[in-house]
Image (spheres, rainbow, N blue to C red):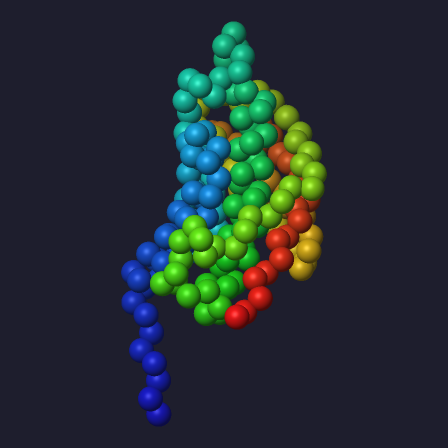
Length: 171
């Protein structure tokens, strides 16, 4: 019995990292804010490195509420897109050789997004993780939490509903 030789782990990691870079690169505002993503397997953690331009109230100082909201929404969209992309990558439906901005699936569209500001975001790095609560063919619900120094002390959380873009039909 001839079994196909498995791909080296490094090749798989590089393919996944490239897919995540291209996916996150599809949101120019994420680049402006400096949002990065740390991938461990299929789990993503968004990182918002501190920058003076992110301060909304210099007297406190505190992160701008719009920056916090955008950070949470970007995290939710990337997590949702990553979960769809992950499935396609791992089942072989997505050819890694054509992985670029033109061949990635379209990003989900926000239907609504509700943010709870629990405390001021301090002038330091922030982190966020999203959890897809429900994902169907047309609609998805995602919950996001953001923290800074202590994972158990979140400073903002959000729930969003997204319209899933139609999948391209095979040619």
